[in-house]
Length: 63
Image 1 (cartoon, one colour):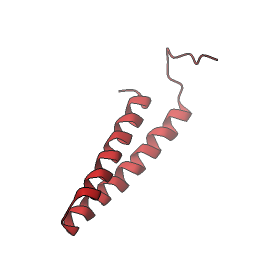
Image 2 (tube, rainbow, N blue to C red):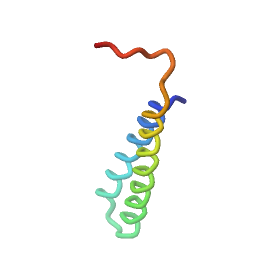
Image 3 (spheres, rainbow, N blue to C red):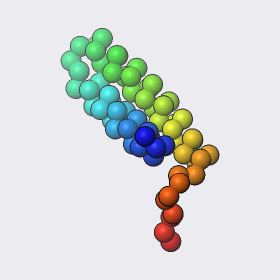
Image 4 (spheres, rainbow, N blue to C red):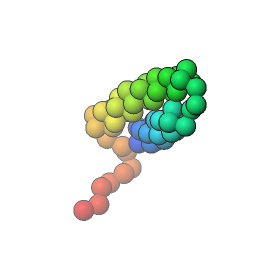
C-alpha cells in the first residue's frame, strides 16, 4: 500500500467514524466513535506528512 493509499484509507475511516458518532444514539457509543475519529485523524496526518517526505515512484505530476 502506497503513502497515498494510506492517506486515502485513513481519510475514509475518519469520515466513517465521524458519521457513526453523529448517528449514535447512546452517549457511550458516540464517545467511542469520536475517539476512533481522533485516532484516525492522527494517523491521517502522519500518512500525509510521510507523503511529503517520500516521493512516489512512477508518478510524475502533470502541469
